[in-house]
Length: 182
Image 1 (tube, rainbow, N blue to C red):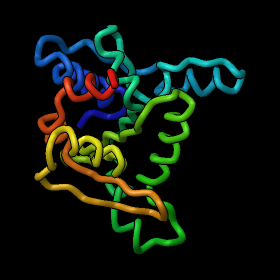
Image 2: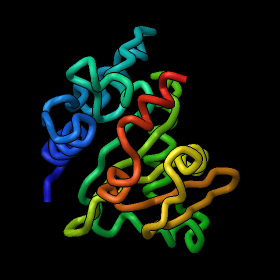
Image 3: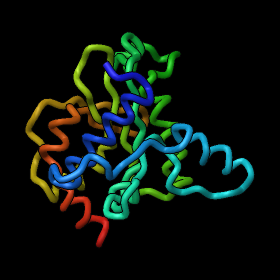
């Protein structure tokens, strides 16, 4: 399984092929220092809007997706990602929730519409975690999602986790472009 930067590069390639309908694998790239450049510059009150998160665009035609989403990419974490931690470990914040909080903080700083976490556990399939509000909006445009998914909630927040490839088959780049044009 790809780790760290290799996993981010793999996701960039997959997103590029999806966004371009198979024409190119080079529309997206890793952010500098996995978003660290934006964080460091923010401490100095400087903005670097397209260096937040783990993935950004390398070609202008890919900019609408990055304007829409703050993308975090995680791999590994064999035993650290357990959805049951949301209900049976009240004193311990689940790893997914910690990632989400960080992602949301950066999303607000970068002024994006939604956050997503793309992750893969060791020797498992790649998944995507999106907030329920995004899911509702996408279902209004793309129809009901009818593959396997897990709904999660914590206090007032709720999310959906699904297989990344199923998400890419369900949502078209045209849907994202249409949302961004509105």
